[in-house]
Image 1 (spheres, rainbow, N blue to C red):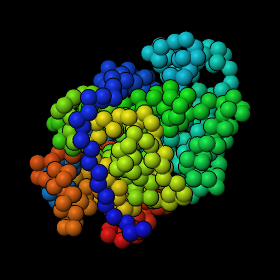
Image 2: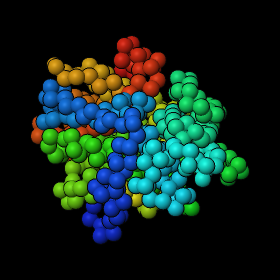
Image 3: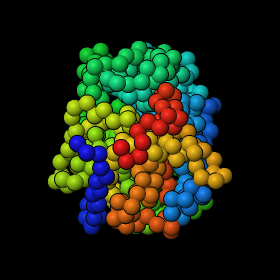
Length: 400
């Protein structure tokens, strides 16, 4: 299949918009207070890249840099920790606000809970966050990784005490394996893919990502005109879309969802727009490992169907371009170390703004010198070997 850019635009003239109050400012503030109770908590920086924006023909570029999150080099711990905290609070008959970090790790709480094993499937970042949280709580974790996962990511998960392994399955099959093991062994499944009967934990995970949106809103010096969000199953994209849609209402920025050609389940679902979720099957061997998901999160899709404006399916080389642009910005702009999935949005916009063959996309997306664009770099160099191969050695050159 020839790699290419494909765009679907949704019109939001429906009356039955999905209620996003559960992702709004009030909930996000509560989530942020939970995360702020962790001794390691610090706001991640919002990088302003004015000279890079000018070079690309944009008015402004802001990048939320999640490589600084909790020392784990990725944002995913926000969802896993909040979901686990919310699960424990419910089990104890408490509100999450009554269960800050210090109380959650106390002997008193651990005695009440007994031993719990948390299980998940991941390409790396989410599993590391779940393993880290379980380790902090002196509990157990089991992590299944899809085939092709980086050894470095496996080692990082094992370093948190998890029983972790790389399977010979794709991501969605690894999720099914984790769920079957949870049912068989009485473990707690912590996954952001929702299905009928499994919605509480995915909802909590999405709410957990609200801390990222909440911080960005406070840090932004001006309201963005555009937000670009990369997506795997769509839980992060749905969470941030829901937050900004709730905050700004009808005045919300133009929101665009970016996926790799090889795993564009949300793009396909938006393109069909028939009320069904559309899956991608097979290996999905994209370099954007964190986005190699073929089955949309139903809750995430409900939010995106109501509030996201554009869905783009893009070639793998755009992620590599984003990594290089962020690692080597124009002028005096500070660099952002961003991994393959984290840089997808920036790479997509950089290619659209500089490739004459994509002028029609610029026009449709309303990207010009007045556009003030917000991105979320959701991971740093979590696979250092591949990061260097891309940024140092020019792996995946633009247009190839």
